[in-house]
Image (cartoon, rainbow, N blue to C red; front, side, top):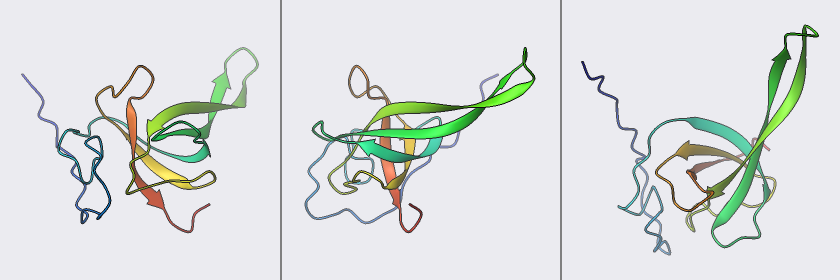
Length: 113
């Protein structure tokens, strides 16, 4: 028995200057699926790529304590989103866009730095 999953589509108006095929808002080449995360952009020197990180708590059974760990990902940064270093963003999983990029920024969270 197959489980049907809902497709999550972003309903926003296309921006003027976005010619990116891999943009989830303006392009038709990308379909979003899977996991959604909220993180902070900490780097972005690579063309149309941003580095996003967020902290999580990891439980160590041996010591019965929790420790802070962080997850860092390279994500696609479309022209119409254009996230800068320090911005809080929402990212979502998609098909592999390159060797290391499997997520795309879908929204810049305003006022939540």
